[in-house]
Image (cartoon, rainbow, N blue to C red; front, side, top):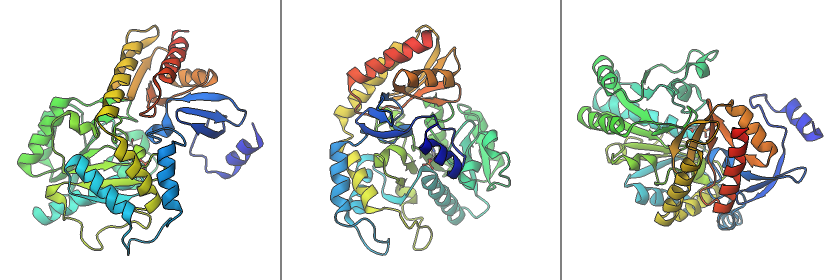
Length: 388
Ligand SMILES: *Cc1c(COP(=O)(O)O)cnc(C)c1O
C-alpha cells in the first residue's frame, strides 16, 4: 500500500472499499494511475463524467465561470443557474427547476413537493410515497426510506415514515396500494441502476402513469443515473411516452461537478414557495456552467451514437462465453456473468479496463462520447476475462 493509500485509510471515514489504485489524471475515456498505468474507463465516475475526464469544452465553460464568480448566494441572480433551468425545461417540457448538489437532495426535494401538493390538494394524511422494491434513491434518512432494499435500512432506524415499496411490474399491486393507503406520489427509476441494471417494464410504467393521472398522484422519475443522455434519450422516461410531474437528476448532469436538479411539471410547478426549500450551494455558478455545457451537447446525433454503442455492447456480450444475460439501454449496460462480478471487475482492472458492479452484474457506464475504438478494445478485454 502506498503512503497516500495508508493516509486515506487512516483519516477518511471507512465507507468505501477502495481498489488499491490512485487515479491522478485522465483524458476523455482514458485515466492514469500514480504508477503511470493506463485504463480505459467504462465507469465514468459512476455515470458522472458524461464527456469523460478533462473534456476541453466542458473545462473551458467551467474555467470561464471560475474566473468570474465561483459562488454567491441564492439571494442574488446568477446567469448559469437561470440558463441551465431554461435549458432543462426546453429539453423536457417541464416548467421549473430546483437545484441542489446531489441525487439524494434532488429526491428529497421531489418527496417534499409530492407531500406538499397532496397536503394542499387532498389533506395532510395523503403523505405516502410509493417506490419500487430493489430501487435506490440515496443515502439520506428519507431517501434511504425510499430505497426499496432492506439491507440499506438495517442499523439506521427509525427512517422517515410514509414509504411503501411496490414490486416492479405489478400494476395490480399499485392499484391495491392506492386503495389501502393515502398516496401522495410514486417515484420510479426506469432502469434500476444500483439494483442491478434492471429495466422496468414499459407497459407497467405507462399503467402507473395512467393511474397517477386518474387519481391525481404525483408521478416522479428518478433519473439520477438514467438521465442526461445515458440511455439514448435525454431522460429514460422518454422511451415510454409518459408525462411526469417531477423528474430528479444529478450524476451526469454536472459532467463531474456536484449538482442535482428537481424538475417540476405543470401540475406542481408552483408548489414550492418562499422558504419551503433551499440549499446554500444550489445552482452554484460553476457547477451550473459545467452542466449548461453538458446539456447543450446532448443532441439527436449524440443520442444516436449512444444507442449504437449500446447495441454494439449488447450484441457483443449476449451469448458470449461466461455470460448469463445482458440488460440495460444505451450506455447503461449490466452483464450477468458466471464468475462473480467483483472478480471480473478486479481482473479487468489488472488488464487496464475500469468497470463497475451492480448487485450480481458487471455494470458499464462509459462516457457518452467514448471513442468506438476504445470501447471495442475494452469490450474485448472484458470478454476475455469473462471467458477465462
Ligand atoms: C446515485 C443515485 C442516487 C443518489 O445520488 P447521490 O448523488 O449519491 O446522492 C439516487 N438515485 C439513483 C437512481 C442513483 O443512481
